[in-house]
Structure formats: structure tokens, C-alpha cells
Length: 178
Image 1 (cartoon, one colour):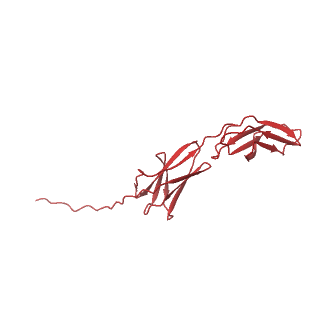
Image 2 (cartoon, helix red, strand yellow):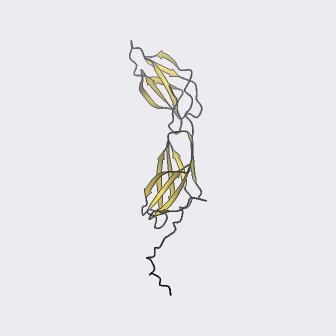
């Protein structure tokens, strides 16, 4: 004759569905991720190249998003897991979002300066994958978004000595040295 105890309390676990495909876009150094919301998810875990980088609260929005600020030239792959009560969905088989940050361009070469009409005219050689140039005079920036292969310093004063330097930046705002 065997006597058994009563059943323990039951627990209901809900398997979380993985978010559908994650999309990623790049603007400057910011990778913007987006994915459709998962019903009943309370948080999402964002993975970059297989490593968890953020846990964000779910919202009532139909689409969730996250911005990752990138500083190194590389390719970044993203996946997202939906979570509730400490249980998270798998990211296996999920189509990942991917962005590539291009390396900084080479430092501009061939910088020349000429004086004419009380202006100083700067020119330099073209760079590869350059979105803009930054010009400094005496170690202080005087122009931030130069898109031409030259710059006219119309604020130079007669009798003063100036030192100029130029660096190149790509579309991701990664810049060369001086």
C-alpha cells in the first residue's frame, strides 16, 4: 500500500516566438535595427556578432528598434531574441541584419597654399571613399564639411603666419589622421 503526496503547483511556460527577420541600416556611425514586435514579449535582447549588447523593454509599438553606435570599421551582424519572465526565444535560423562600416580614408596628400586677393587658397590631392574634408588653421578647425578639393580661407589677416592641415572623413564619419 503506497501513499502519494498531492501534486505540486503547476507552472505554465510559454515558449517565446523569435522576432521575424531583423533589418539593419547604417547612417554615419549609427546602425539602426528594426524588427516586428512579438506578442507578449516584455524585453528583447540584441546580439551583435553573437554577443549580447543590449536588453531593451518591449513597447506597444508594432515595430521595435534599437540604435547601435559603431566606432570601428568592420561588418556587424545583428540578431534579436524576445523574452518574457526570464525565458527568451532562440535566434537560430533568424535572418540577421548586417551593416558594414568602411575604414577611414587615407590622410590627404599634396596640401598646398597660395595667397591671392587677401585670401589663402588651399588645395590637396583627391582621396578614395572621402565624403568630406576637415580643415584646421593653427590647430583650430575652420571648416568641417568641405566636399571640394580645396578651401578658401577668407578670414586670414595680413601679416599673420598660419599653419594648415586637412583630414579626410568617410560617409560613416571615420576620419584619417592629419
